[in-house]
Length: 417
Ligand code: EPZ
Image 1 (tube, helix red, strand yellow):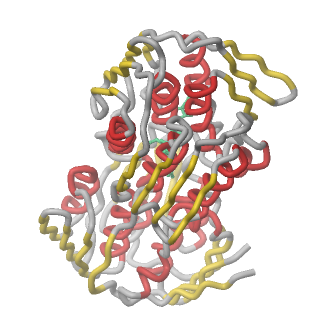
Image 2 (cartoon, rainbow, N blue to C red; image 1 turned 90 degrees about the vertical axis):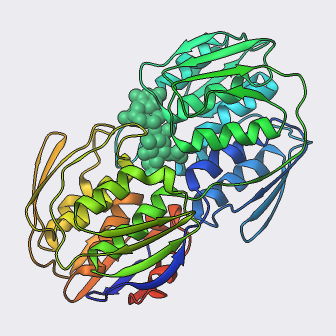
Image 3 (tube, rainbow, N blue to C red; image 1 turned 45 degrees about the vertical axis):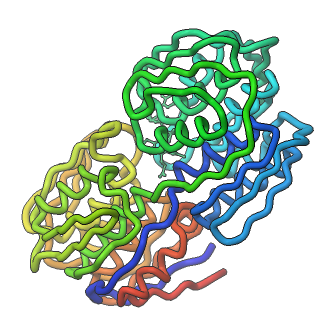
């Protein structure tokens, strides 16, 4: 596994930009199987997870051409409706293909997506939604076989506003004969991007961004071109990287409306922030102030930013309390931060961080995507050299993050192994 060697203590300065959203790209790429035609996507981040989606599209029989951040998908001749097990296992979010393939073909076979280091990641809400849509579900030898003569439009109330379950139910009901309603739907901006994409493809969906989404089934879909929204978690990561290093940057190509809770917490911690249309200027204070964090479904503070802001709070003045309300095991990275000198106590879903003046470089291990990003940011601020191992996790979700940070004055070396 590869690693980053980081020489800490450099203040980030200059300007950079936000790439396309990983979590908007994945469902939109899966949705391209619905139109049995040509889908042109722009601003797709060039990362491991989008490459995996391309592999799955090709395994289903699609023709896919990628040129940097442009992906062209021809789904005219899909010949299979089974998601290959080895690809499912590598990326749990490939479960998003289930709704799209079901919506088009009425049958899909996939294996249980692997859990990962942030929790068990069940898919019970996805499967309950499919059953409510009239889909029969059989499980054998770790495979899940879903099939139906036709999708039956209905009203589905989600026990929890699951992002993936909301997306899968939307995709499965696009071509149904009638109207489906999702109650207690997830309200994340990526759901709005998916609705905008699908409506451009000829679907009739309303309500994304609210907790009630209505999908009026259509009989035909058409070729579509679409520009993916900016990645709000990458935006937050670059802002926190500036805060933790005491730097000052301009961040471009950002959708400010998607990151209000993150901006509010950075201001509360003492950062000076100026907002303009699609641009943010941030200047860090001499010493950051401790702040409390509670992760919540959107529009609350995003769980994906929990580990990232925690790195910053390790060197803030005072004690911060974090409550992780979304995933049951999203504190593994804290053990690694403790090796760098962080003063942290975990009590159930609460982490108490006593800010100290300095972190110290050492060898640490990434265990998941956002936990890995947290360790990278801690290394930027730490005294001395930090070696973050298993950075393949980070490469899954960030496009050229080390290059972007080095262009702002960081000193990060990628050691491939
Ligand atoms: C999406 O995951 C994101 N991934 C995650 O980002 C993000 O953390 C999460 O939403 C929450 O915002 C993508 O969009 C590809 P959920 P998803 O279904 O859809 C429980 C990142 O770092 N749940 O909203 O898997 C689940 O266990 C990734 O970019 C069920 O119990 O999240 C969790 O506790 C990490 N049953 C909670 O709901 C289900 O059937 C939220 O899960 C589904 C979910």
